[in-house]
Length: 333
Image 1 (cartoon, rainbow, N blue to C red):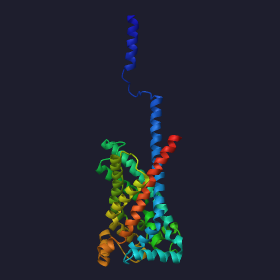
Image 2 (cartoon, rainbow, N blue to C red; image 1 turned 180 degrees about the vertical axis):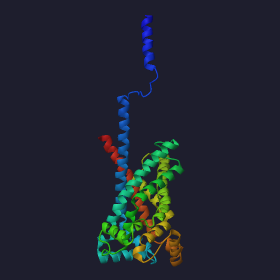
Image 3 (cartoon, rainbow, N blue to C red; image 1 turned 60 degrees about the vertical axis):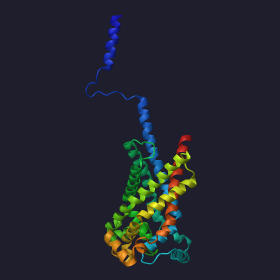
Image 4 (tube, rainbow, N blue to C red; image 1 turned 135 degrees about the vertical axis):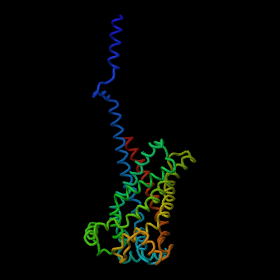
């Protein structure tokens, strides 16, 4: 009996003895399956965010494309802006070139917006997850400062990766059809006639504008959703509430970053408007001296107060609803 117990004891001791150098414990099949399930879940989440973001950007920008094109034309010219003049410009464009001409440059916009929105929304979800893990808020709404940081970082990431496409869109919006036939033609001509560096002209004001714009937009939208959940007891707002939250987010974000948006457009289109804008401050000084602060740096802002909230509201709502739909489809599957 004692021999048996000794044998059992030695067996236990053998099992519990420390691992020799180079020896590893075998991974059980259950832990392997859990790890692979987490990997699949994370990959699916990234793909969901990319697809939802791409769709959100495409729907929102197409909805406001005529207003966006009109705004860019006023931003890059010294003509005085008013709602009446904007309407006249839209009507003249329609009479001269037809209804679809109001969407001229929208193909270039889509080429830029789809990857931009996909990257921005996906990056925002990933930054939220990383910051949530760091601050101990995983799966919950982030505190205010990390919430602002997550939005700003998402905007910077997307802008850095897609900037040349934004440059092309601005050129396409302010030039006649005869000058540039398609997106590839713009890239070739700019590279040949003005140099590759031109594709990143206006990049610095873009990044400086993206930080407050993306940061405040995401921050405002996430904050309003959090406050709504606390007040109403409903985790998911209705669609019209999402649109309203997104509209508020767009209004605040675009108002904060608008002067830098004007500077960016002037620098992007300098090659075709006859101006030579070198630096951000130099461009700002020239705009202010020629047109004044409000009429120059805030030209077209009133149109942006119509266009911006509509676009951002549609964008956030489309993203959220697509995410919810995809989750439901996966659960059913």
